[in-house]
Image (cartoon, rainbow, N blue to C red):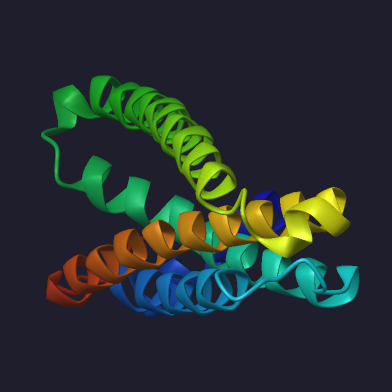
Length: 165
């Protein structure tokens, strides 16, 4: 994600914020879609590739999204708006992780209890718990798919002024 943020800003300067945001969100959406299909048997190689795809997509969006918001502010408010963009990004990530963790713990517990009669729970409890964890992780990434699809719709609706270098 961090490695793609700088190129995202450069590309936005050349092609405009909207185009880079749409491309980045589409990449992230594809990555999250692939991650939602992980299972307990998914090898590390594809996991790394899917994470890299999602991270690169999100990284491309960081600079153009901030630039679009800051550019929309009055000149005398741009410093405050810049700080607000960063603060809201951090608050959003913190709340998002907290909510998804809370949901994931509850979901894992419900799946574990519902599957107690599953023969796999008795014969291979470690495998059973891995399957439960993989299901919860996949479902969690589906929340990301929905959020990214909504963000993509917003980006598509943006006007397309070119960013000034």
